[in-house]
Amino acid sequence: MTKCKGFRTFKERGEWVELQYMARAVRNGFKVSKPWGDSSAYDVGIESGERILRVQVKSTDCRTQYGYLCQFKPNAHSKPYTLKQVDFFCGLCDSGRCVVLDSGGGAFAGEAEEGFDAFAGEAEASGAV
Picture 1 (cartoon, rainbow, N blue to C red):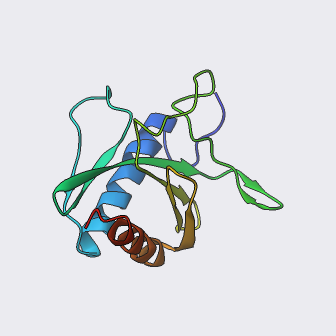
Picture 2: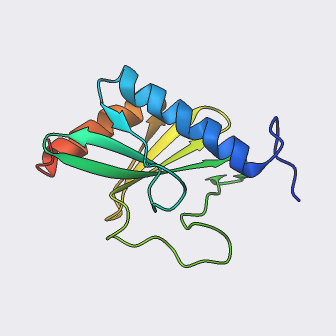
């Protein structure tokens, strides 16, 4: 198994990152929910008006010369998520930087709070807020 800095397993790191994301979302005024179990394609629900936006949270410490590498699929052997499964992705890297992507391909990069500001703006622009 590849080394997972500071955690015993990648699953443990993923759970920690999901908690970090949820705490930052609440700090930025969002209401959050967590689906029960591991069966859903998304990790966190974000209330936005009458809608719940489905967010898949990913973490990475894999740095390349161009930035961080993160796979947006459930695991290395599966197909990528579909637009019917996830509304937004959030990638958190080991530097604390946050990238929020809508599942249609729009990207918002910045420190975590800036990423949430962009997320809120995109949710509002899409009529979800």
